[in-house]
Image (cartoon, rainbow, N blue to C red; front, side, top):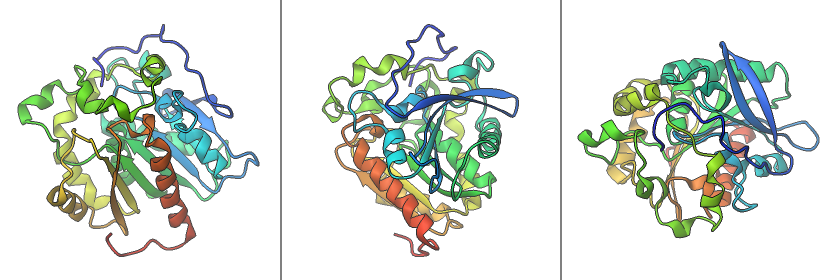
Length: 301
């Protein structure tokens, strides 16, 4: 997580993986920058919408430190369209929204983005959300509001922080590299050379809501009625994810037909930029394949 402020327009333009292109979408009065990768035949099974966390950009899902990192290229090879969106207050919308938006406002924009994208592109069976960290909060809130989503996969986001209440005030306002990254051996050697184009300041209005998340989750969780998969990294230290914490979290998702919680070995909070990225992405896409194959398993597991 980075300090607050407007995203620098002087930030280097990120290199993109083969087959990934930039896209601009206007929705709900906001102009958003995105990254897009589509299957070679242009006929996706479904569309995965990837939502980045606080202090990052859509490039999080197209990591350049190693060819195996990119969710965008992997998803397209496996028959999915993958759309990675710069959330409101990031990328192109940073100048328009220098203080960002609340989660509720972002959810309204994200719903409009899905509608706009579907009016111009083949989406297959519909939309899956794959989200990380603060983006997971947005995905969960959107899932509680939108009826048209197929399923939700979230990494690096729980419902109770592994922080003292007094410490929540600085989350998003200064960098805690230990919590955000974990052991550096979990990441390819070039990771931190290629970060300049991926990191961005967390907008003020986003940071202001950090301490309210547990109460927000308690209110929205019972309204989520699609399959949910949650992943916690082995070295995740932002969130409580012991057995009792997971039991309480899943109990609150009572209306979801399937809730699956997994732990990713040899990974830090930023799973999609580490050596474990490919394994995590494959598991997430396999979960989406299961959801496409038939009615979700009603058993909790």
